[in-house]
Image 1 (cartoon, rainbow, N blue to C red):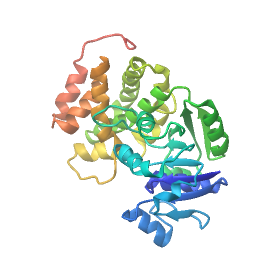
Image 2 (image 1 turned 90 degrees about the vertical axis):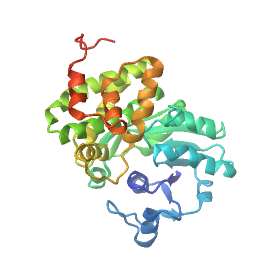
Image 3 (image 1 turned 180 degrees about the horizontal axis):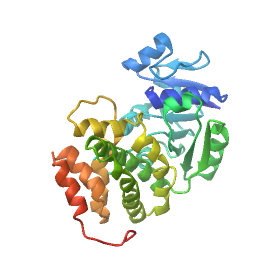
Image 4 (image 1 turned 60 degrees about the vertical axis):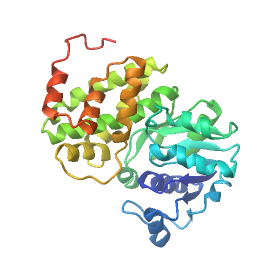
Amino acid sequence: MNVTIAGCGRWGSFITWYLDRIGHQTTLYGRKSSKRMQAFLETRKNDLLELPPSVTLSTDLHSLCGAEVIVVSMGAQNFRGFLKELAPLELCGKIFVLCMKGIEDGSGKRLSEIAKEELDPSNRIAVWLGPGHVQEFYAGRPNCMVIDSESQQVKKLLIEAFSSETIRFYYGEDMIGNELGAAAKNVIGIAAGILDGLGLSTLKGALMSRGTHEISLLIRKMGGNPFSAYGLCHLGDYEATVFSPHSHNRRFGEAFIRGEPYSELAEGYYTVKPIVMLAKRYGVAMPICECVCRLLYENADPQKEINLLFARRLKKEFET
């Protein structure tokens, strides 16, 4: 299969390495202005992995034209702008696989919704979600992930083509739930880092339970399957996000609460506002996400926020 990966960050470079390793013809596309792409052009390496000579490197956007499958891995808030750049290419009949986790700020739209708006209708869209870090995969440690699409044919094609001893893929059955769950998972990751920074790591068990519950309520209200929050897109990704030293969202939350700088992309920072906006739109109480939003954007006092969570009305554990 001829696959072009758009995005030369840590995840895009891993996908390139992985798909080449299991036998696909792969091209990694990155902008000429990208320092990461320049590093690959000069050394074929970043700080996590090395790409073999069989991988084609390109800074020409037209390299996407010859691909059967285009895998997109970039910051979620940059996605619509990237698709607008693609418009002059008039791409048709492609499979776009979205390997990002986020909700568009301002609109509250899922990434697959943005793709539908910006791409020709003949293109088909899938999402690739679930747990795992580049460091772990590159070291040979396997994990399970999920691929979802509104097209059963596309799901079958991708899962059969991309599965290996390194990644076991499952068939997704709920685009709404999988995309929302994956995006909100990063917000919970920031919350976990905040708890670590406050010396309250023992609360992370409660965070996982209650965080999953409130995400499931939003998924249900938006027309998805609430049980998706308990699958690989969300709860199944918690170890890699809530506990792992490799988790950028957890590390960002810990650095934020300690007043320390953090330069890596933490998608949860940009996701929490649209998640809270959706919660208000659909009438869902999401106290954890709302707390994180106030801490990040309203300079709220951390201890007061914790106290507010504990002072909420007493109720049944699974009350809806």
